[in-house]
Image (tube, rainbow, N blue to C red; front, side, top):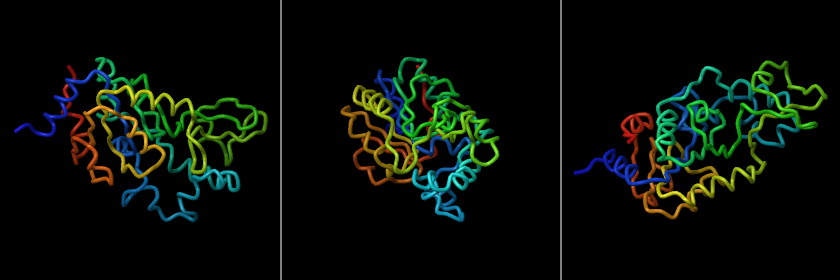
Length: 241
């Protein structure tokens, strides 16, 4: 009988426009904690609830507290692309993968060599002045004393989507277009509980719909192939032809 890994490899071999849709679980093997697991960011004992801290209203009202938390828990300078990031870049170079759609903000897909990446929630690597729009790199933000300020005096905000903020329209359009045009969609490392991101799956109309996740999700039943395993373990067995 064909194993699930064999089935996955066969589906990849038969596909020409694969889209990978990933969540926090993609980067945990790079040493970046996720949000909702037992040892995730949301479970930390902090003076404010973490979900409140990463909201736009909290950012506006308490920027110093926001940046104190942000610098500690949102930037991991020693994190490197893992086997999943590297394998996806390899699939793209081979002409099999057409896009990566990610909920992560760490920039590791790009660091691994992927070219077409739709970062639904932005990136910690990009930062801009809220007053004049001037761009700053991540080192400027993390090395600033307290609230990072632009040369014009404005606050430098990370280009990440906080709670109460909308996703970037151009990024949404690109992700939806890629998923709609895909002949295979691999969803991985996500609880499928965060909307609107989780809702992007509905734009896929093909018959090769795969879920790779350590734990079960509320949407398992819609997938043709479900693999409950370590993402790194599964991706290391993918053959790129």
